[in-house]
Image 1: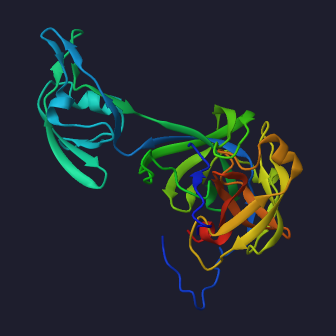
Image 2 (image 1 turned 135 degrees about the vertical axis):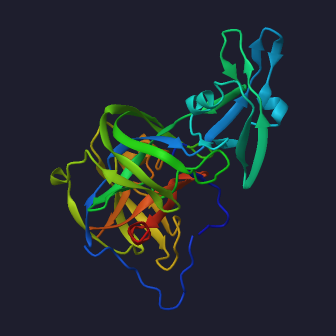
Image 3 (image 1 turned 90 degrees about the vertical axis):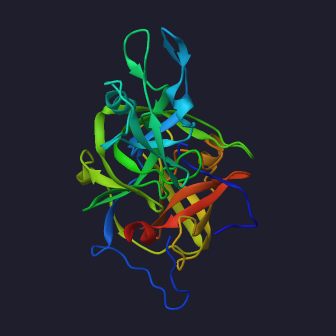
Length: 326
């Protein structure tokens, strides 16, 4: 859903089609979940080693870059070296530590490319191919709800710099202490600032797709969280639950100005922040708030997903049915 082609930005780290006739919302067998709103730190290792840069290797014969010679580019993702799956810089190092020529399987955008790479020995006696690898992605987002299957969060996927959904090798979420924020302004997105507490693990990420990030909850005590009925969004007054300070979420007033419950999208709700306290502090929706549950008439009906870049008081949301039926 787009409104007059207004530019938007994903609120984080920074598809299917339904019939327009006779479409219905289908919820989980139990139509109750535990309400989220708490911030979480996300730590993800992607499937494949993401190359973020190339470098020359200092050898006794001078500077050499096997990766450049082979035609590897920044932005490539290395999935295999010979028959071995690689996901981290250490995986690549181990694959080439015998100094032998290897066949490398690369994904470049949607294309699979095969390259032969021969490492060189650096002045310290270690074999290198001359690549910088981004091992881990970290960011702050919001838990939407917890049910018997685990947790649901964000309402949109974790994506790479090109906007493609990341293939997650493994990932975890942790408790997060929000210590501050940058206020959003027209044309400049704000963001939450916080400390990810890796000593306090919330859960394990098992799925990253168009409708959110999902996983097994391991450290969330549901007996201390509000149980809430699942509902359907409609135009009118509502609330979001979000954490902009510390660990505990607060309720903030909003207005749902558009709701297309027949559309399977993470932008099928349009909301406007009306809460004076939230507008005065953050300016509205900021990065890190995606996943904040939307509650209307005492029921959870959706989650915040995006902010309008030219108006941080407005944004998109996803219907809760699209997350639950994911």
